[in-house]
Length: 239
Image (cartoon, rainbow, N blue to C red; front, side, top):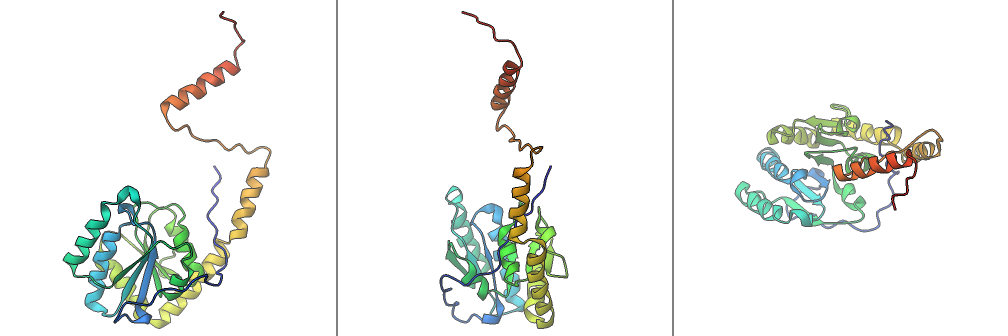
């Protein structure tokens, strides 16, 4: 088994402008995330987290970049109702954007909670821009986020816990600057795009490396087995 982590390119100039902040928003207290809007991305948890954050840090804003996943269209009305019930009005849903760079430049920290993660690109892109990341430790997230160094890892079960870590980063500028520099260094040193592409080239060029695809179903596995057996058996004419 060969594990090749994702790579992230160096930040580039933004191709478009980010929208204006919501009225009353403090530009020094903007956090954000980028993901599809679906249950697995735990937007409901982020709403609860913002409800906790609002109690201790008025003026903070959460910007969510991404559209509603059509397969989970029924999730959106649930989020609208949760926003109403929690009395949260400082989350800005900006829809899908091919270029998230303008938004990353607005953020002071990147938040991410999910049921599953591989080696998430969204957090790597944020770190490359010097954003500390606050996320739950799922999948490869803990390989990117070093708790207390370039961000914070949270349980993903307690919105108040995450709100406290977000507030810590937004209020303490000394820690924010240190975490920001560490996040940028981690992305550049441990997850460069050229290293990822080089390792893929080496893997594909290796004459001894076989890339195997797992059959998608028992039927496919049975057909594959029959094909293999036929290839090792004499041909019999049954006509």
